Length: 228
Image (cartoon, rainbow, N blue to C red; front, side, top):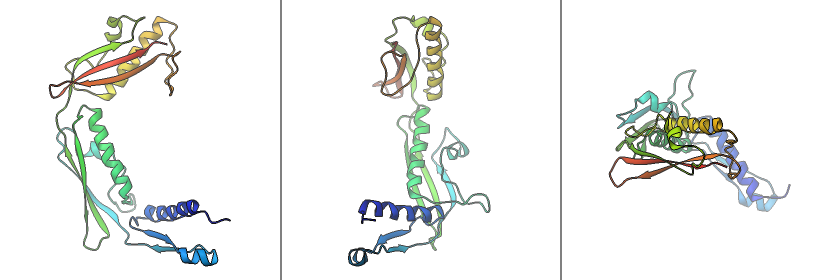
């Protein structure tokens, strides 16, 4: 085959992924460019590095949610003989930080800050991961309103809502209430909910919008409705 630097780069990445799946997160792979240009032979030079596994995962600073609940949100797991390999993947670690942050935001902690610290053992074969959390304030919904509802009275839309004024914001309740709003339109007849992207103006669509108040910890929840 013709020499293709892009495909060679993909090959390097594939080799590193194999090592990473076997708990070698610091494997480094390079292609011998001199040999390639002289003879057309592809030589992968591999520096394996140490085999590393996660010995322990700690959660620090969490007050509202327990360690087990937050650990359920992440994919990194500590090593346990025969059952859990304890694979340490730096890229996955960053995704885990984002997952914890998203979990807090889904429950009204819009100012949460999440960091992580990796402590490496002296022999560089084990790591301890610490997720450090500053929860911040939990936001409360001070107003629920609707835009674009012409065929459904607001009283009907509000009737079965659970995410109401005075409650802490919860994304799961918003999803539940969105289904209740869809049910109101279904009973009205002639409205079809079809969540596609990009949106089709012929179908019912409901988009949640959040507006933060100047007063700390307050948020307005708006259901923006396109009836179709």
